[in-house]
Image 1 (cartoon, rainbow, N blue to C red):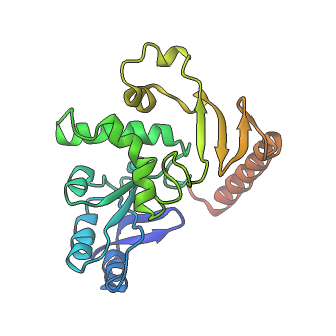
Image 2: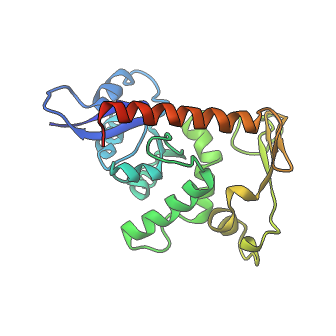
Length: 232
């Protein structure tokens, strides 16, 4: 029987010889009396999940992580989900299946990937992709009253982007520029809930050298563990 297994990084499609109901069915059952806050929508199998949710009056929301295709988990039917009224957000998935955790690349991917799959160059516009990472993502998490856009009363979460880099010139459309041309390296400063955590590309709340050294140490530990286990 095909079902999806919960991993540390999210839901992954796998085949298991067990009659256990798939996670989306159990999730929909538990949420029947209330609101389904968010469900990881990674593959075409999510069709049945949000159809069941809708039939039971569950608020249908989903977070899609395009880069999960790296582990052949499939592609979420985003265009159809939008037509069905699913509140859709965008995520990076975990480091095990997406090495860089880069939201700029996720916006670029979600827009281009579905153009290829549908053969429609107009499906998933740059503006929609940008909104998946901002206000629509906040709506999917039921947090749009607090985050997702710059409005009075909401948290002061914002990025300062250097838009004078060569890769962004010339600019014809602000959304196309941000989604297709802007890179993570173009982010100059970051403010989270009013607190400046990066200024002039310099981290203020973390020691970059320490973070790098810790990451390298963990890599060595993982490589040693893999080597001793005989995993190819």
